[in-house]
Length: 241
Ligand code: B12
Image (cartoon, rainbow, N blue to C red; front, side, top):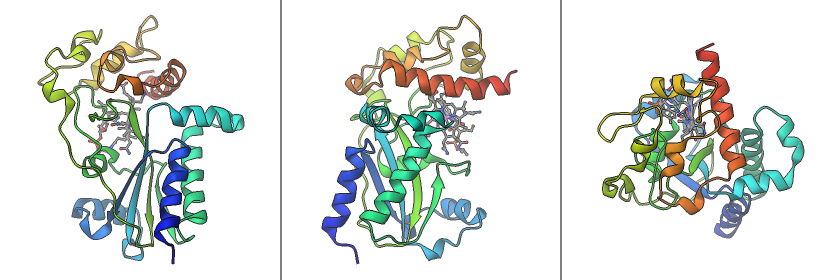
């Protein structure tokens, strides 16, 4: 049986490696919809006790990746590969080496942002990326797995969306594609069509996202921003060849 000290060591290990957001849910507390989504994947959910959601914010993860293992960047998905490895290692070394089922990284149709809402990490923002007071727009989901261990439950208080007290809306004003609005949902189609133009200033960055002043000290560095946006651009280009 894993001790609280061992559990906390696992949390510290994840944090040192840039995975600084952790939420742990009791499976009985999850909405029926999510149970259904997991069952549809052919997974016997009753065999597990907890659902673990891991994320990163700010710049540490990128620094760790760059420092640690250059070979990771030879793969198509270095962040996913690293996130999976570090999740498996944490369970093995600190959390009792118990049975797990990895749900993300991967293509499973489970809405991470909906889980982010339950974890207290996510408020909607005009650009679709989640926002919160502590990390601004600079966080993302890195792993999701079921685990057969009674891990302590963890989540953050819901908090208030920073967008509610933002009246200038620099993101809306800055977006050169006029894809953002303070009252309507983000127009991903308009954003995508604008991004694929050859002279688009948004090919490898998002000027609207970068204009947000909430937790701007956590903004990814230029290299990381470019890495992520070129990846999503490649997916978008497949939609609009
Ligand atoms: C498919 C997908 C995409 C597709 C969107 C296709 C579409 N037609 O909308 C593409 C490849 C374009 C994309 C791009 C990006 N994505 Co995306 N995407 C996903 C993914 C894998 C699945 C979403 C989904 O289908 N959910 C299931 C449906 C039922 O639930 P839903 O919440 O209603 O899903 C819809 C929206 O989430 C929307 N969507 C998906 N990504 C994004 C990003 C933005 C900015 C918006 C407005 C909408 C949007 O697409 C879904 C279907 O319509 C999720 C991971 C996940 N498993 O949740 C990440 C995810 C939503 N994406 C994310 C991010 C960060 C991005 C990018 C900003 C990455 C980047 N730096 O380039 C870009 C931004 C897009 C842009 N402005 O150009 C993050 C958001 C993190 C956060 N803090 O909220 C997620 C959660 C991935 C992660 N690991 O953290 N994405």
